[in-house]
Image (cartoon, rainbow, N blue to C red; front, side, top):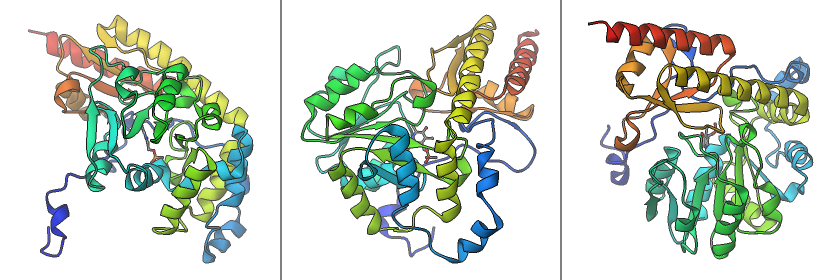
Length: 355
Ligand SMILES: *Cc1c(COP(=O)(O)O)cnc(C)c1O
C-alpha cells in the first residue's frame, strides 16, 4: 500500500474472485462459467468491420442491445438497463438505491457485503435457516433495500416467485433487488412482477447461461423510473460502459434463444446426474437450481479435498467462512469434466482412507 491511498480505503476488505490460473490447464469448475462456448452466431456477427469500428466510441445508450433484450423478455426498452457485468449494476444499486441501508442474506454472493462497505451502507445480514433456505418473512416491511440472489449462491437454493412478490409488496418504499444470475437453470423469473411492482428490480448476467463471462455484460429489468435512476448514476461514472464487441455479443446471445436453451438443458441434465453420483459417493448435495452444486462429505475435510483436487488439476471453490467451510461449490461442467471430477474424488478419498 502506498501513502497516497485515501485513508478510508486502507483497511477496506476487497472482493476476492475465484482463481483464473494460467500456470497449467485445469478442469475449471470454480467460477460458474459455462463449459460451452457462446452462440456460434457470434462468429458471423463479429466481422473485420466490427474490429475496425473499435476506433469509434460505442453507443452509450446501447439501444440495439437494449431493444434485443426488451423484445426477448416482453418489456419496453426503457425498462432495460445494461452494464459492464451485472456486478456494475449491483454496484450502482448499492451506491444510489439504498438510501435507508440494505439487507441481504448472511450467506450469499460475496460481493454484497463488499459493495455495502464500499458505499458506507448500514447493512443487515439476515441468517439463513439451518437448511440454508431463505425465510422470506424476515424481509417483510424491512424499511431498507433488499438484495436477494435467486437461486441463492453458493447454495443453489431457489425461492419461489410468490415469496418474492410478498417481499416486494411489503416494501413499497424500498427497492427489492433480485439477482437472477442463475435463473436460467432454475425456472420462473420475477421479470413479469416488475410490471406490477415499481420497486422490484431484476438483475441478470450474460456471464453464466449465455457463456459470455469474458465479455462482461449484465442487465437489469425494472420500472422506467428506477431504470432512469440507474442511467443517471451510470452517466455520472462511465457512459461508455459496454464496449462495441460486447454489445454485438449480447445481441447475438439473446437472439439465439435455441442455443441458450440447449446449453441450459445440457447443464441441468448434468447437474442432476452429478448430484446423484456424488450422493452415491457419500456426499451431501444440496438440491441445486443453479449451474453449480454445494456439497460436503462427513468423512472428508472440504479444504483438504479442494487442495488435493487442485493438485490433480481440478479447480473447485472453497469458502473459509465459518458457516460454510465444510462445503465445496462445484460448477457443473461438461459430462466429461464431471467424470474427471468424480474419478479424482474417488482416488483422493480412497487414498485418504487407506491406513
Ligand atoms: C456471477 C454472479 C454475478 C456477477 O456476474 P457478472 O455479470 O459476471 O458481473 C452476480 N451475482 C451473482 C449471484 C453471481 O453469481
